[in-house]
Length: 318
Image (cartoon, rainbow, N blue to C red; front, top):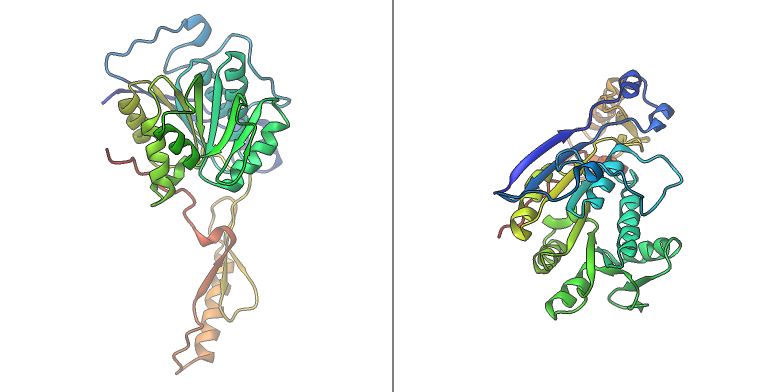
């Protein structure tokens, strides 16, 4: 097993001041992120530390391949420094936190280095969406899904993971490819799409570097260790738990007349609403007293359908 190096980005003073008062001020981009890197046994980096820093504390002092019209978040900045080191990485963050910016930088960097890049998604709808959005930013973008093929000669190919696996099995689509971006890697434990993801990762030549985009997962380090062991290359794990989009949990009791906010965006239990919910059940039980009603119960709506929003990512068994 490889060696694990850990770095935690320090908590910025601005964040400490805002911790008790969340709101619009969170947009100052001062929340922290975690960074770990797993390297093969005996591995020594040949990177210039003045330009790229160290494995556990990566930096980049060169000319960026892509400039953003906004200030990067800490996890985005750390991810870009890992890309510039030409090393694989897993990036885990909540939905709408800006993982697409990392994809854009990987594409721009590949084009700068005259290398091809593949963006692989397990879903056709996501592939179509990314093709449209990336085509508005870059000139050479193609699409390959189960029913559509557009510009297959493009330098950046957006495709479904199933297409990538099929191409790898027949020995094509890896010529002059420097990077593969796997989106939705948290689907690795899915009984169908997870197998396709696993095989695609295994079949990739070891010289190709990979970016794995994921929702928050519980065992990012374990996944990085698997990549390191499988492809004999360093693998970074960059993560952030910050959620800029509030997540609230509601309960709608069957037979009730309204939804009840049970857990607010700060993760606090709303006891007053919980008491109202209990009263609803009491009235409902009195109404159906003596009857075996099949309609009693709770229906969860919206985000509350899954109170735990972070799915565990199981490392594929080799």
